[in-house]
Amino acid sequence: MSSSPLLAELIEALRCLPGVGNKTAQRMAFHLLERDRPGAKRLADRLVQASERVGNCRRCRSFSEQDICPLCANATRDAHLLCVVESPVDQLAVEQATGYRGHYFVLLGRLSPLDGLGPKELGLDLLAARLGEGEVQELIIATNPTVEGEATAHMLGQLARAANVRATRLAHGVPLGGELEFIDRGTLAHAFGGRQNIT
Amino acid sequence: MSSSPLLAELIEALRCLPGVGNKTAQRMAFHLLERDRPGAKRLADRLVQASERVGNCRRCRSFSEQDICPLCANATRDAHLLCVVESPVDQLAVEQATGYRGHYFVLLGRLSPLDGLGPKELGLDLLAARLGEGEVQELIIATNPTVEGEATAHMLGQLARAANVRATRLAHGVPLGGELEFIDRGTLAHAFGGRQNIT
Image (cartoon, rainbow over all chains, first blue to last red; front, side, top):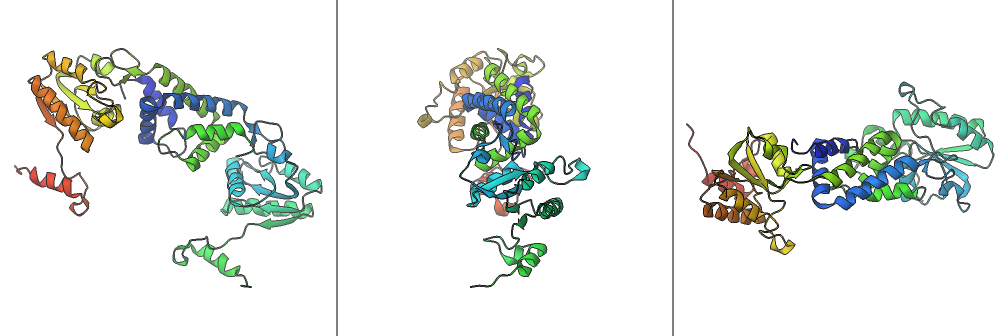
């Protein structure tokens, strides 16, 4: 837009958001300038605050502005259970969807040597030390069912075995509301092989 | 997300963007914090700059940080043509899609008495004064083909007639790549009624 360089810069900057291309960025910029300047300023303020002050919890590596996040510090949660997820988004999904009341460990990635993500970057030394403390009785491996996620899960399983901790993996199968006709073959094979008795 | 109040605030603030609900805001916030903190700060800076400094051009009412926008100040554009659009987004669309080299006038809305948008809010006095200057020879009415847009177009047509200026309206018809089968009846009727000779 030739009539305002600042507007063009704002549109360009909005494209750093995931899933936002040129058209969407334009629409967002015009919307903010036409109808919601207070919202734009509040958003700017929150962006600065969050990107400067949100760090990672020293214990679970999830996002937190404190040294130890409230969830790790919460004494009412079950310290015998530890759920390992790839990212804070996955942690949020588990927290919102299930009644899980144990603790979490966030890898902040998955095993991917080509991207320079090895055991050290995933904090596996921290996890091994945690398992070594002896309090955790079950390690729930909730990495994504992708090739890299499966490789990560395999390594986590080895870690658990070395520490003599029981390791479990989320069940694979037919998603609720899915139709057999449209489910990919791998999932269907998993669901078939893992069939359960109706009691 | 209980583990970080700042993160929760950021997610909330992102929802001021059009088309961004809770899930998308979460994904955006996590993406920025995990992978693009410099981008987040740049975006914050641009938001503040744009929302504080971008105003409206005194002549065409489009967004500009100057008193008169570069487009209005551009002496190489044809001052005989004036295209009236509802918003700066529409102006941008016309500018990018067509070879139009005249000037613009931006209503910043459409006639909508229930929302408190009357002739005064749309700057029609400014437009009347502009037409009265005698330089404009054609008023191209490019309001949206909605009920309110049509009412606005009708009023703009009266304004042009009063100033003895020729008024034109964008052609209605079958969009390129559209199929007759799927086009709404109103558009098809317009396209049929406005059929043209093949020369």
